[in-house]
Length: 298
Image (cartoon, rainbow, N blue to C red; front, side, top):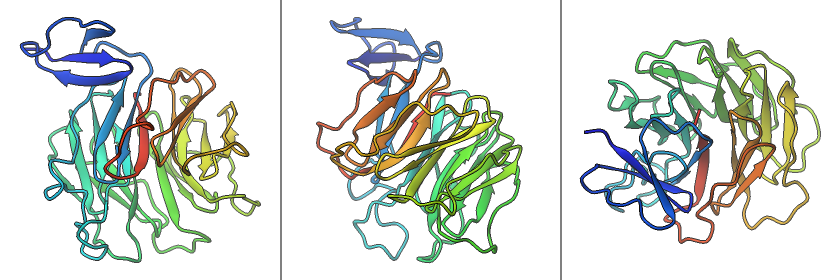
């Protein structure tokens, strides 16, 4: 029986037809996989996932003691939240979560149930994830890239000099390449991901924390923890939070395929720019751990 998505006040969850009654007042029910309007997912460090105008495929947090995203890397302590990145599949029918030890799948991510990543060390933890057409890529802070579940390897910065640690990763829209970004704003392109400039070597008021590809694949945005946004190639600048009051640092950026982009803070606050609509956030809700990433519906 086909699942359905219940959307209420911008928050969506997937459920079986037998348990989804109504539509209820203030909400709409739509078949899963049919709604292609803009939407995004947010991830906390313990693996909780929040869905806004997107299907909810599940979270990595089962209980506080069973979460794969809790202290499972052996050196951060038993209660340390270890999930730190999320990436939607190309068809938007699932997402991958990076938990410093590998890739955790939710929804339709293919036949790979769990993808073990690189050896985890305090020197080069996992910092980014990107869904490939088949499989998934993981990036580590030393520039290493690990191709898992059948993903094609296009290169990495592993073993090469870096001026700053890698902090993020973004795939091309076609899935045949990816960019890495360092905290100094340096960008490195592999496969079809063309280098279009960066903030490397330029003054920054705050470290860069993320990167998102333009929908055309011929540009990208960098975001810094103070909300500053830097556009390269044909990625259009549509505004930022730089110089504006923030309740928490910015931790991620995601591109709206119809235009614009979203920023997310560690408190769950979401800021929309360009044609990207604001669809809600958990900033006024108690969180089990800080928000660590955002992924947009492709």
